[in-house]
Image 1 (cartoon, rainbow, N blue to C red):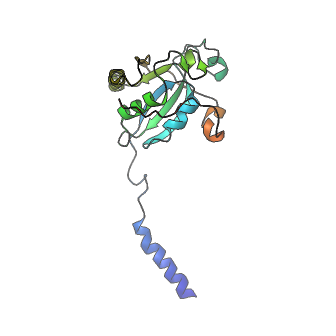
Image 2: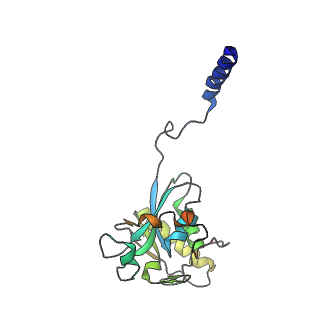
Image 3: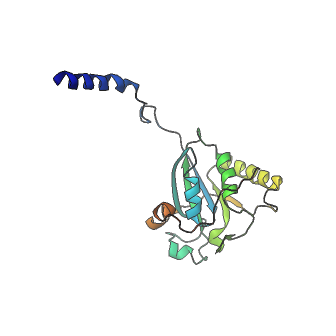
Length: 193
């Protein structure tokens, strides 16, 4: 019996050298952050977090003129904030340009201050850039989407410098994971830009 146990233990140790290296051993992962507003943040978050290369997605508020934005303030449509997703991703696995092309497929960028049944400035289409490179990419991708004619009319998506991001309340985070079948007007459209 002791021999069997020793044999099993020695096999475990000998095969442990073949295990995949952990991310920590490979060094830190390069990350980039993007802020996207495309209607109700529940559906945006749910679709974006499934993309390869996504590290984290948080929902919150950006673009307004009130500090410490909360859902109760933003839902009135008077604070100037947009429901926004903060996307942290690995640019070696997901290019910013590809993230934006996906963004333009999962919401209707041609409707001003509206997505599905949600109406108000908080549901506008907007890209908040964090660098000049992101700004240039956003402008180029938006022009590409318009030129394709896939939507039938031009995108009204705003492109502005990112400001303060206010993380939404915990019950909004991963909402459609916590509430399967919950409300969303977002889906992936089979478009080519």
